[in-house]
Length: 229
Ligand SMILES: O=C(O)CCC(=O)C(=O)O
Image (cartoon, rainbow, N blue to C red):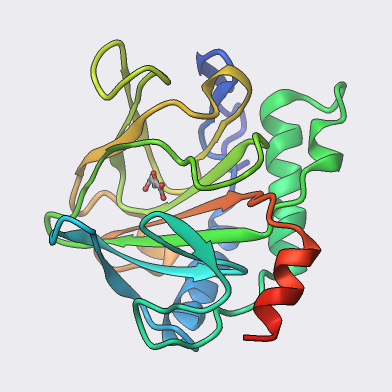
């Protein structure tokens, strides 16, 4: 937390919690540096090609498991065929702290959280993300979202469809957003990034980074099969 009296967490929908200013500026800068390293490879940042022929405006790199529409694999078959970088233990630890912060420690939700995949999204220029569900995971564990750089408008909807009701939340650098429980499969998207809103101390000159942590539910058997590819 950065402020003397940090803003409280806000429950945007049941199980969907926004915690403003969760990461210190120093921690944000460390995460930006880590994202730069991950973007170098073994799989580079890429714009994801959609089955309908469109290309996403956001550029993405994955850790642990590579996401492509609409499945996870160990190798980035739609990029360069390389195996994605390992999911770091320290990032899983950060995910556990995030879940504990969002939901409180009482239920122990944080201690059992075991994310094994991360999508790192970079938004520059007019990049945005349409309303979608995160549903390739075979597991209903929460998604943890960390925002870095420019502020965005994050649209958080409902599990039934892309339309209303939804809530527009401003996610600023250092904010945490966790969605699980009844909101785990809610549609969400990023209609807008607000340029030049980042603190230069974070180390991202222009644009926004978002890291989402997920539990894929893809077990050791699947992993062993993939290792033999
Ligand atoms: O950038 C964001 O805040 C949302 C990212 C997202 O929805 C996703 O990676 O599925």
